Amino acid sequence: MNTGVIRKQVIRYLARARQALAAGELALAHDDYITTINRAYYATFYAANAILSTQGLERSKHSGVIAAFRQQFVKSWT
Image 1 (cartoon, rainbow, N blue to C red):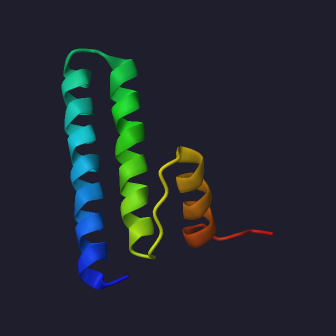
Image 2 (cartoon, helix red, strand yellow; image 1 turned 90 degrees about the vertical axis):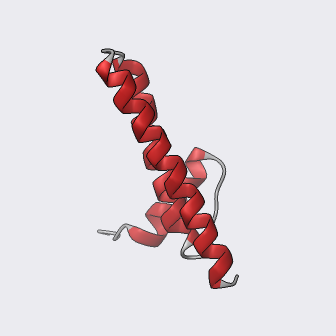
């Protein structure tokens, strides 16, 4: 995959992560903790997809993002 495409994917995912964080901040200001946590989760999901994109990986399912992130970036202790 060419670097221009990867860069656009990373930018797109980070924009979505920032949008989720902004929505979470608004929810927090209104003491809506469930929505705040939900938006923080999605911000993390989009940020993880951004870093996976740098490796030419992209996952749509949450379990796939977690598994790919773990495989690519988390050191195994076994």
